[in-house]
Length: 178
Image (tube, rainbow, N blue to C red; front, side, top):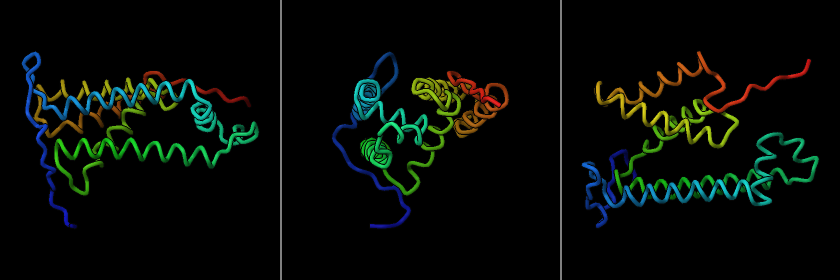
């Protein structure tokens, strides 16, 4: 049961299909479709539901949200539950595609953190754009350099953004009154 060896989940949905000269497995298509559906769901949920608006209010200013009647601990629990559910789905799909090991999520968390910082900490679309930007930079970069430097490309991009555009691609500068 335990150990640090990679475990493979066998599946019949690993057959590959070629599209424009690139071969993708069925599980990779399913993963992409699931991610798109999840992203659309989150977007509409955050924009159009009472709880979505409460989540945005708590993210913006928890004490002010509590003053206007938002149950802040309930919102924290809701966000944790949603995040756990989405992580579970991602973990299952990833384990079918690449196998499981104790460190399987570490790189994903690091890349997501870099994507959020590059995109802008205060914007939903910035995180998506940051993820796309980092992913493209990594995959275009490995055409010229070995793939073992893929993470170095992401951290290099992070350093450049922290130095030259610390608010991210879509982030806003917050001015405080004195």
